[in-house]
Length: 123
Image 1 (cartoon, helix red, strand yellow):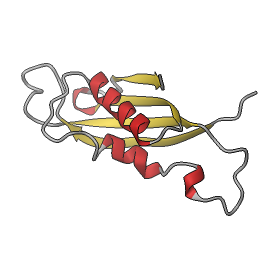
Image 2 (image 1 turned 30 degrees about the horizontal axis):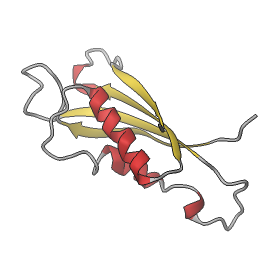
Image 3 (image 1 turned 135 degrees about the vertical axis):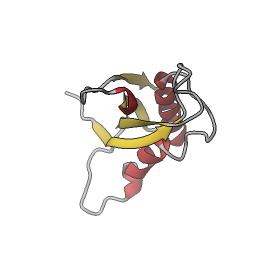
């Protein structure tokens, strides 16, 4: 079996310019974003292991918030997810795989979760 390390940030609510319909364009809509990043890990984590042996969880949060370009309209939420993946790959060579789940909150009528999950592997 192979050891693995997956860092996660779940259920961030972020307002993003996205959508293809006229009622969606021009105004941000809330997206619920969850991110999982698989990393290359060291042989062992000791009690005094420095943060540099892993990755700061806030980097995942930043990829879904501060790293999204202001004023850019993403027609598809898949493009939002792709941007998050690329941001994490560029941040750290140890990131091997990123999973981004996005739920469009504005279109739910009965608390259903409508969205998608994108998985990208480092190429």
